Image 1 (spheres, rainbow, N blue to C red):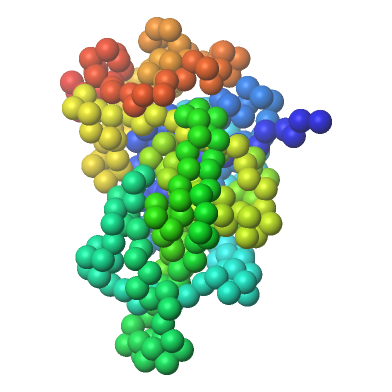
Image 2 (image 1 turned 90 degrees about the vertical axis):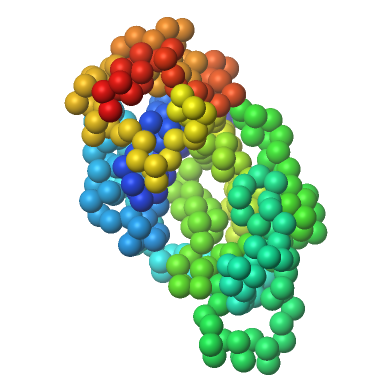
Length: 316
């Protein structure tokens, strides 16, 4: 018996959602709804000062305006610290955690870059500190907590890009599970939230593909099932620059003043390969037409060939 699909979208509202975020939300939503499944919304506001309530509310409003609906009330990570603490303690009981006192400068000076992202691979500077060393250092610096990785290769069969693997000591390194300010790390929080919410299909940008072996490792340690992963191409502007909230790329505040919901849905669907031509489209039509075989693998450059985007650029 096939398990019904439960998908999700999990934005970090440190700024207004841009078109790349909305494309990810749309593809995750279409995939779940086309399969007759459930869809959930999680607000990843662990770092509350960077994710004020007004931006959380704006993200929910933007998704609702686009026609994306969810089957349960949105889940807020900022309200789930006690849950993360419980699973942190479980990892601690396994003897796999240790304190790290390294500064950012020390990390970059002693580490090599990870092949899949901008984060350096930790060189294990604090991995074998004695109890006496820890007691001395903790007097002047609050440590982050790292999770030891196994001496093995962990692979994921991504449903869109195929197999991706990392030899954990070389390509990943021991990674942070709780920050020095006490906030739980992204890797632990998303694994716990997806598992407890019953999420079994994760759609997200391929810039996060390198996180997947780490998350599979945590899933194994905590006894959780591994969901299906579907990574998608990123949206770029006409100059090939990846869209980002920090660059204040266009969001629905500006776009919705000039274009209808159907215009924007049609533009996003066309850019991803779901529609053969750019035209207005209703959500119900896109749900019925959706097929992962039609979704592009290469990153999508939004330029003069995309009418809504080009018109918005002229008036931005």
